Image (cartoon, rainbow, N blue to C red; front, side, top):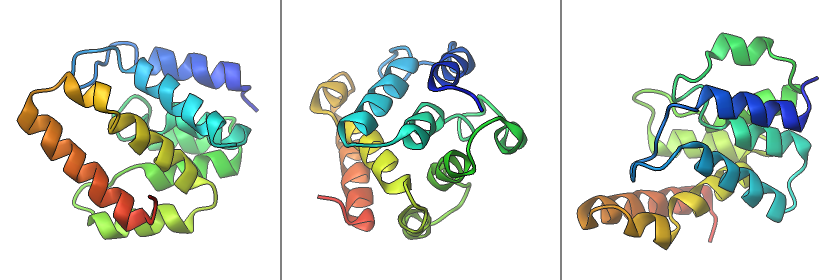
Length: 145
């Protein structure tokens, strides 16, 4: 099994060339989500999933790689649960997250960082409002405050 240190290093390498919507290194988001999972009492499987939560969706790793990687089955399931699928309805996405043990906490940490007012303030007002509304809708679908 990959250690958390190895998972973090892998995620940092896989996303090294990516930036977020504000032009900041994307690995900062991954680190914040992992820290958010820890702060919410998440376990090692959830922390590993936090580091990898956008890896398949962003094309940083393939789904095949994820399925074959030396990760716990629970970590794999969480990552796949939080991976958005093309054309998927938000309600279906939320239902998959809610039905996958451990995934809701990872998604909650992800949404908390995405909706951080300081992060949103770095965007143009229209984009910031669109994203804030999107994250609020997802929180409602997930049943989180």
